[in-house]
Length: 490
Image (cartoon, rainbow, N blue to C red; front, side, top):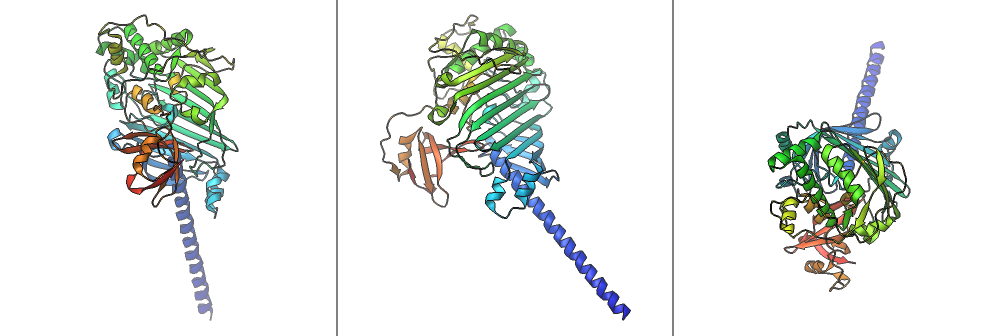
């Protein structure tokens, strides 16, 4: 009798152990599944339209997830380069993470997370496309604004080319941070390349919808309220100046002037011109490095058609800002000028283009005349800032997939010319080719087997329609699939 009772107890204990192990396995499996969900959604938020791969995603007890061997491939594919990071850490507030993890409703699952921070470490690669809109005009490894402008032949550099300057990139660190609250979204991003430089950006947007961060949806009605850029040189500027001066057989001072002239020509493509104070401060940075801070406030905020304007001088009446070089504050002196687009299909460096335009050949322009001023400069708010000059070309470049490494090409693609003529087609478009009459306009596109999407027609090339879709993490450009097209509506 005692033996039978003991056997029963042993059987019950074994069953409990097995059930406990099974429950634990289910819990671990679900924890890993939720970690992959959070990581995947975070990547879609940060890199809309990109291909992102990673290995070994594991949840963090504090809330969030870590993964290793992260590879970023831009929308243009591997031909445009790629970047690989040793690891990424996605941090989410403790209660938000677990509230989303144990939610049974998809809506609650998406809405629970309102703060997310992505930290990528030890990045290496040959990508020249920007990681994001806010970092558009900064080199991915150098972190310098307009990194190669002024060089006779170069427009941008990848990591493997910087050793020619005597530099040894040690791997970059990249950070994206999103904070969402009712009616407000704050995006902060930073790029740090030890021994090269660092750039930090912050954008605050006013939202007119209630979509969550992880829904990835966006109505396109959000407005930009403030922008900030803070960047500091850690050795790249001096190495760049020596390298380009030696390569082009000129003095360092002559190269710096070439750089200034090239940057000014790029600003003209979007209707902006630096005034004397701004040019002098940026010249000091371009000569010896240092730190630059720009803080901008838009009153009223920038939204609607103005956000996509190809002439950035239209922003000036709403722009209030300050600029600081090495902590010394001054007005952000920008003025409007006539828009001077770059030639179509231009692949030469900006400086080579300047030479052709001026007919100067190899002659240097050491005393460049200022561009004609058409409106007043940006007003000084008197607000305190930290330190130095983000060039106005990056003040609000819409987030697009950049296809060429040259900065001038980036600006030209970021601000496509808009067709103001009335469309020749009816409100409902049933033929793919009709979309060519709607360049610069917003349409709702219906595709077989997919949800309707709101897009802007950017351009038509060889019959293929390039559109831009606005998502909460940024804008994503892609070619509309002709085979799936059903119809479109205004």
